[in-house]
Length: 427
View 1 (cartoon, rainbow, N blue to C red):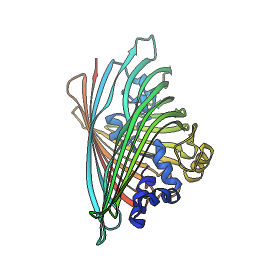
View 2: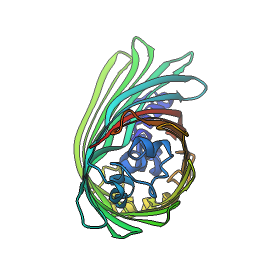
View 3: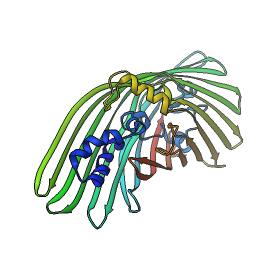
View 4: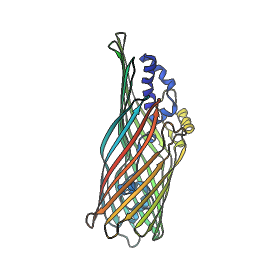
């Protein structure tokens, strides 16, 4: 996304010719930047679902004993014995420190969103457990606001980019106990979301010489997939959970428009362009394995998650310049790599109180073989929950992460802070 279009303005600075810049840009943009711009799975930040799960760093596949089991491991639903209704609201803030050379400009963007909503419905059984659940979870968000500036003796330049969006899923799932120590579960996911990106760049030399470039890209996202899971309880202090998520084929409706304007030696010209694209992009199987142990008032959990980014594929013609579907898929296999995400969590039940305190850490490696474009993400989190009465559980979670990305030679340091408040009522 930004790789192609910010390059346009870099060339403007070098050539002082807007139209030449538009033509020359195609040769300058790297394929990695094109993939980052058009493959929605590579952008944004995926934190998962649920306040307690986030506070534990996403190390939740062996726990999954609330509504968020629909995301982590639907087999965990079988451990819920009472009707549950849950809701969550999130407040996120992204700080974007953007730079071209030595000038760094900091911007902040805040978003308040519905993070989760749903219910869990256990059915009476003679033995074991039969539980169904329906819920919505916001899983990934695309938020940034960067300003790039360069001031020299011959020109002043400023470029502003704003991106906002989210990807969430509605899920319908169920779980049963197949033995006293084994539960299995399945959930059907309907994914829905959007991503809105806009860019304005302006270079001013004098009243008779300036260039301006405006761009807007809007994506509408939808798709289906399944997640299945198993939960083992071989001892009262040990739980083992595993999940397997089927390939997700997202339908992407993309609306693209741009307008280039310039005044050179008093002569004004402009170049508009607009196009709509419809295509599909598929994300392969994703597998996760987790363990959780309870040692008195202390609980420890860990997860490993395998993602093979190199198997992402376009099933329709992508909106690339000079790359058809087959060529784009070959470049994905060449430039992306499999990764293993690591998640760790700890929870302390405060003695003689209804309060539990959590802390967590997650490491999400960059999907690019060349991680100069996008660095690894290290997520630190913490939370606290308490029973407000015998049925109402309140959870507050705070998470923070930061990472760097370099697109078109322009650098950004992004720092993301996420506050999530959830309420769960069990009848």
